[in-house]
Image (cartoon, rainbow, N blue to C red; front, side):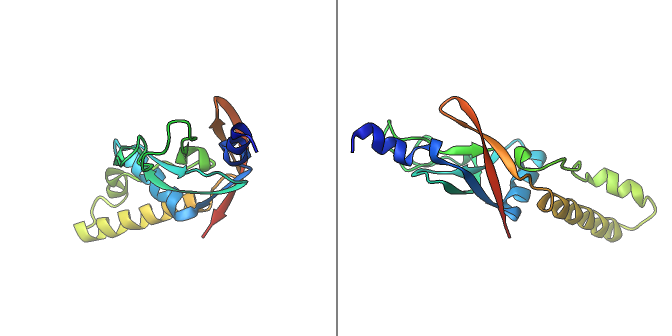
Length: 151
């Protein structure tokens, strides 16, 4: 087997589907919407036809460029999937002021409980709204792969 064919055998072009945990998608989307952090779902080499993408903060650092432990320079890098690309029509995130405005005469504890319930409802909607496919970039080309939701 030549070196080139060995790279093709484990390269990102092999990916046909990614598996994401519904809770990871909700967490990544919430973090992205609520902070300046860029949180993604990341699939790391070696690649296969079915890949698991896990929660990853791009600013988390690590040993290599993407915290990959210092892979060789010619090794394929990880695939990053924006959580917004995994959710079909995500509702707007419930802001504290909006939920407080719904109950202007309520005490603080009631408003806190109402906001927590609104956030949980938003998270449930996100978990139930995952797309069946997502576009990923592989070697400068955009490919569509299946999404398998876990949990």
